[in-house]
Image (tube, rainbow, N blue to C red; front, side, top):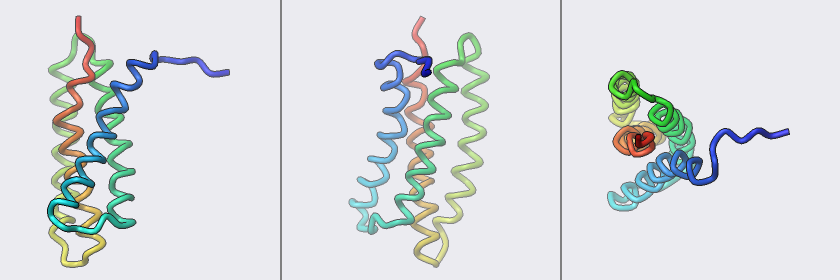
Length: 119
């Protein structure tokens, strides 16, 4: 049996952050003329997982919003730096993979606070 944790409205609020990040990656790739290929899609899939984590952490932060924001900022910084360096690669598949995760994670980090509970 399935036990729902969130109602449909709350679940949508949590999932919209990584979906918007995926759309942002595809949009930016289109603007700068990079093909949205297998490696970009793989990066977006990884970004979906990261974004849902950030959204859930903010949603459940309760009275510890500042601590949660610091933890997510540190996590995002390491992810953005590590995959951002991949985007500097001369090998095109690695560059596209790194750039897609860089853009997606940055977008998720900036939008994730929108899922925080309002008291």
